[in-house]
Image (cartoon, rainbow, N blue to C red; front, side):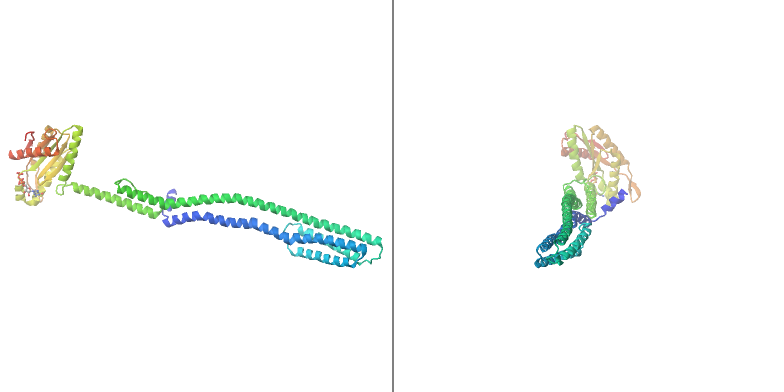
Length: 440
Ligand SMILES: Nc1nc2c(ncn2[C@@H]2O[C@H](COP(=O)(O)OP(=O)(O)OP(=O)(O)O)[C@@H](O)[C@H]2O)c(=O)[nH]1
């Protein structure tokens, strides 16, 4: 399960990671803007608009009702006192305004608070009563019975006071409702502030996550590639570039690692070829020169002896003349194999050139070296040479042995002494081993 999930994410492309990173960085800010718009609009702007429309659509007609009710009351009372027809006209104008205000209130669908329509209907019924009392008073002749008109005016005033009370009640309820609305808006603004902080925090967090994704998918992978390439350039061949995502970079890293391994393998192969004699497979002259210098240095530091044996095939020109150059090559290969299998793991056999071989024997004193050289001589002499799958003949070799530091302190001196010993072995009749001496 976990492995599948890892594989799934590792297969995602660079485009996917970059897009995810960017979306992750930008989306919180877009979400923040949308949320802000919706929240502010729904919870703050709308209630404020409602509040202001109530002010316009309800409070002002209610105000007009209160004012005109007072004017009606004054007109009727004054008319009852002196019977001036102007008060009748005044009443009619204010009564008309009250009717207009009620019809305006009835037309605006009030959703302000549930009881408002009911309260308005009670107030309107009350106004009807007031209006009927007013009509009766206005219809009375001026020189009438004062006791009747007085009781009518008192009834009128009772009814208009009730109307005033109703209107006052409505006005107070509206104000109370406005206060609640105002309180609600303030609470919402406070909530919005808390939400903004939270959303901003989330936006920053997601933004950071987006940057981490971009950084992880691209920049850190690029850094790993650059680091790997420069380490390889400075010779650190063990460094492995490890990139999981994105898949493109992982593939580049994989290609780079394979290329590096191939170069290392080729380098090893080239080194091997450069150090090896092509015909015999032994170390070549170049490697011998390098190796003997190193071994002598170690021997100097460690104060121990090293011996070398220079071995030269006897009458090889004659062998070549008899069996041909290819036959001679077979003989060289056979001698090389004989040397290789007769030596210890720390000893090194090299082809010194032509039909001449040299053996390095670390930690080997002259007496042991002489024994080994003798053993090699016998092995070579007893080895049958097979040419073109036919056992044809044997050959012999002569050797000169020299030991560090006994016969020479330097490579050159050691080789010179071993060469002189070889010359002596040849001069003494060949197929023999001679130890170097200090004098010659
Ligand atoms: N087949 C073959 N012959 C080689 C190779 N390198 C050198 N030779 C031959 O080895 C022979 C060496 O001859 P000489 O130096 O006269 O020595 P020799 O005949 O062995 O005589 P002594 O060393 O005195 O016993 C020459 O004929 C070279 O051509 C090689 O790689 N292959």
